[in-house]
Image 1 (spheres, rainbow, N blue to C red):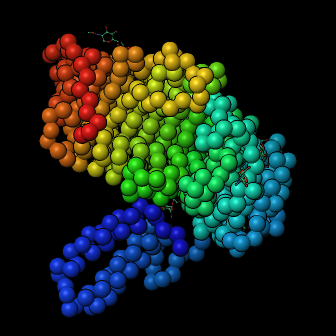
Image 2: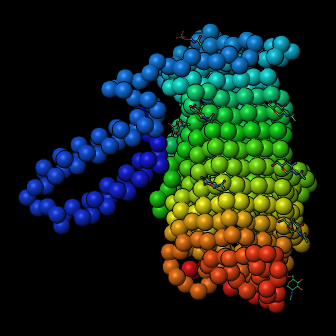
Image 3: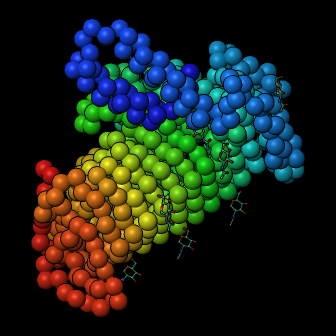
Length: 500
Ligand SMILES: *[C@@H]1O[C@H](CO)[C@@H](O)[C@H](O)[C@H]1NC(C)=O
Ligand SMILES: *[C@@H]1O[C@H](CO)[C@@H](O)[C@H](O)[C@H]1NC(C)=O
Ligand SMILES: *[C@@H]1O[C@H](CO)[C@@H](O)[C@H](O)[C@H]1NC(C)=O
Ligand SMILES: *[C@@H]1O[C@H](CO)[C@@H](O)[C@H](O)[C@H]1NC(C)=O
Ligand SMILES: *[C@@H]1O[C@H](CO)[C@@H](O)[C@H](O)[C@H]1NC(C)=O
Ligand SMILES: *[C@@H]1O[C@H](CO)[C@@H](O)[C@H](O)[C@H]1NC(C)=O
Ligand SMILES: *[C@@H]1O[C@H](CO)[C@@H](O)[C@H](O)[C@H]1NC(C)=O
Ligand SMILES: *[C@@H]1O[C@H](CO)[C@@H](O)[C@H](O)[C@H]1NC(C)=O
Ligand SMILES: *[C@@H]1O[C@H](CO)[C@@H](O)[C@H](O)[C@H]1NC(C)=O
Ligand SMILES: *[C@@H]1O[C@H](CO)[C@@H](O)[C@H](O)[C@H]1NC(C)=O
């Protein structure tokens, strides 16, 4: 049964709370209570499930399946190539035959592959240019969870390393290289990586290579990923690498959230991992994950500096994200090719450890600049805004510690929320000061009324207008009319407290 992990999590939580007060309420009526509780839980659960999955639900009957639109001159059905959607039959060859047929249609506008309702088990396969993969309502593409069927590929050149293991890495379930004009869409059908087996093997150290992503597209352009659900990826869920002109819209990304931070969690990996990409729009998505919901990167130390491709011109808007152990939207820490011109707006981060984060370290080189955050809402997050410059994790000893990243021109406008413990922690250093940071219109409800919760070190910039909680002394103060009220004489003062 398909269940929204986040919904389950919330119910689980409520159930635990209920259980805790149970002994106090009943002694003799235990059985009756339990029966009533199960009935109530089940009916709410069923109702919720139908709201989430069906959209329409009338007396146990769902509406007939939505007809599949024709988005290319030629459309195929996976069954035309021998596909069987029984959840058991392996469909790798059916997918490969379909892709091969579509690859011959490029000059005629390409082709569409419809994946009809059913459960379509497959090993990894490659896409082709001018292709639309359409995953129908109630269709699930299931990733085969036996690594023997997953091809090995060279490490990402800007990483020089398989990330989890040296040497080659597993490719992705759905993969593409050097392509143009790719669409992955549907009526909210699902691509399910069946990551459970992978996570278990990873924890037990039974894998010899870095796990494979769910969807990975490299060195390609004109990509649209829309109206689908991606879940339970073995590793990164959606990974454009050195791509140009990408739209990701109305996509749901789900992975189990770990309830206990810092324990040996499930660690499925960053959900939307962006590497060295240019001209990208991400909008109207819901991401709930065990790691960063979105991570924007551009290569690791000397490998990233040599590869030299920034991530730039990225717009992220209208997103709801949750990251129990990491951050909602992260930039870095691997940012050695540079990251610039990123806008994040209308973002709601709930029930998370951190909301937005920029992280780097000496050795990275590169830059993070022209980053604009607008209209952020934090709902029960531990730390709201984080900038960290000592994220000392390196691929090998060959990095150059004098390659210092530049962090500058970062602005936060309209930041609200409630239940936040530390709203701001900007930890610049003497080597890597953070320059030209602007805060305007900020008011965040706090968990604890403590003095030093707007924490700063080595940061230069300003606050404009009313800011709550009171900003650190490192920043200049301006009034609503943009007039300087107080010039800071203590940009380099350190007031960072990780214990709080
Ligand atoms: C798509 O399906 C997922 C998983 O079933 C669900 O959580 C999400 O709300 C659906 N998205 C839309 C836009 O209906
Ligand atoms: C695809 O094939 C299945 C099984 O033959 C059929 O039920 C379905 O109607 C076909 N869909 C389209 C869009 O042709
Ligand atoms: C997909 O293409 C890449 C690059 O050509 C190749 O390394 C990989 O083996 C292919 N994957 C499959 C499943 O054929
Ligand atoms: C998002 O996807 C859902 C499910 O496919 C669809 O019903 C809805 O119209 C889409 N929303 C937008 C804005 O495209
Ligand atoms: C990993 O390598 C070891 C030693 O070479 C080998 O015995 C084992 O089968 C390999 N495991 C996998 C999953 O490939
Ligand atoms: C970007 O990709 C979309 C979708 O393929 C395409 O319609 C559009 O023309 C592309 N834009 C540019 C500037 O190439
Ligand atoms: C910055 O990125 C946006 C897309 O988010 C783009 O429209 C704009 O042209 C970029 N600005 C520059 C100076 O490249
Ligand atoms: C701010 O973002 C929230 C979603 O997080 C949205 O509901 C609201 O409309 C946005 N406000 C503006 C002024 O765009
Ligand atoms: C500071 O950053 C803002 C954007 O946040 C930019 O418009 C401005 O030009 C920058 N100022 C300097 C002196 O670089
Ligand atoms: C603060 O530190 C920066 C670089 O770390 C340095 O350039 C600057 O002169 C220092 N400012 C003061 C007032 O000491």
